[in-house]
Amino acid sequence: MVEVLVNNYNPKDFKSDQEIRWCPGCGDHAVLNSIYKALAELGVSKEKIVFISGIGCSSRFPYYMDTYGFHGIHGRAPAIATGVKTANPELSVWQITGDGDALAIGGNHFIHAIRRNIDINILLFNNEIYGLTKGQYSPTSAKGIKTKTSPFGTVEEPFSVGELVIGAKGNFFARTIDTNLALSTQIYIEAAKHNGTSVIEILQNCIIFNDGIHDNIDKKDVRADRTLILEHGKPMIFGSENEKGLILDGLKIKVVKIGENGIKENNLLVHDAFEVNSGIQYMLANMRYPEYPVALGVIRQVPGPTYEISVKEQIEAIRDTARIKCMDDLLHSGFTWVVD
Image (cartoon, rainbow, N blue to C red):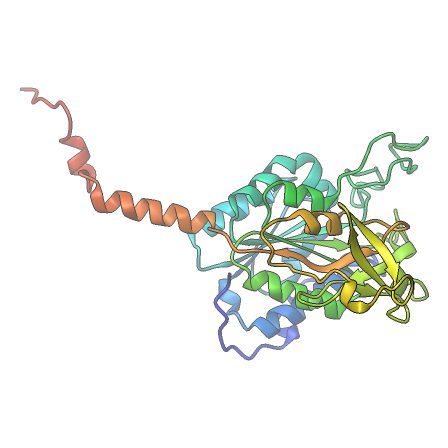
């Protein structure tokens, strides 16, 4: 959780002098602009912000931020971000990663950062492809998709990012899409204010190697019927005329139409992002079109002790009761003798 200050920033204050080298039309541009807006609204001093990345198209992000930054190696950004945050808990630490960088070579780092609940914000760009290395299938690519490394179609089941995060004891999971800057900006603000690991899955378009991968839910004429924007404390309603909703039917979520079979708005599920029991949040994170709308917004947001504060408190407690206070104490402790 960052300490919100009173700096009067504009989004342009966070833009670096580096030329942006993403392809024209890449969804990364929209993500970058929404981060500029979120940081300006948060008002945290630029000197207290760090962006850390691994390898991939999205991992060029630190170059485009007028903050501190570190471009790491493939899959290892969580290890660097963990060290930075543990060494200086006052910093606002943002990790930039992609579906390949985070969930393939970086998979173990990813789940253990979440499990430890380190107070970092992980932006996971999910375009379901390896873009930087020219179009190989990734851990989130749909089963059967034909790519450079699966010319006859993949035979693997893809990861669900939300399922992985919640399964790793994650306390904050949200999902947005690159085209919705307003929603993205608000989610990034909520993530920054959350005390613990925040994971935001960003459904992002790779215009060169996987163009239109999210069009089935994001085209203007279908978006309202195929996505559900969750808001804490509000019923789960969607549709072009707000005529559809979700109910709990036994142990499953079910799509219903308001007004049919006696269904009223007060029969619908009400979103509770702060519920500790992750059962319904888990189902929401895993909803897929065409059976369900895809859930966007903050899906899970619950409190919990953070790693870096727990480490700090442990060190202070040991220091208070330790017999050895300095190097001289250590050298003269235990069995010692003098050599003539």
